Amino acid sequence: MNIYVGNLSSDVKDETIREAFESFGQVASAKIIKDKYSGQSRGFGFVEMTTLSQAQAAIKSLNGKELLGKEMSVKEARPRPEQGRTFGGRMDYSGRNNRY
Image (tube, rainbow, N blue to C red; front, side, top):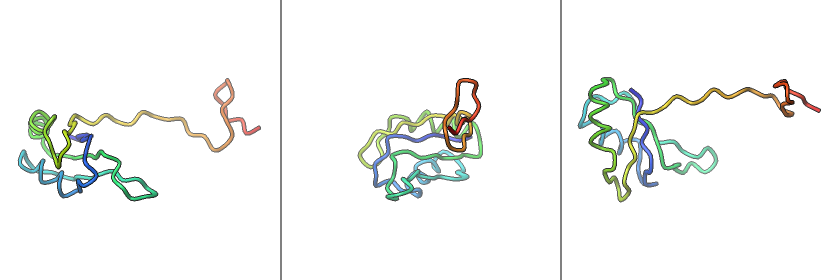
């Protein structure tokens, strides 16, 4: 199960959230999302746990808990919505890509 972890301090690292979740079970991955230009934390990340029951226990226990001075928001991650692909220009009213 993939878990969203929000409202994180800029001091939180991948290892920090991994350690917080490992007390509930096996963590497959833990990643803080960073700004691609500055490299600074964007204040959220994702943790993937191997077992659904362990992930649900972690969500229930860690949501609202403080980590490095900030109260975390922990919930099941939702898939990203599908976005239309455009290759420059703008969309016209028919939904087709219109460059001019």
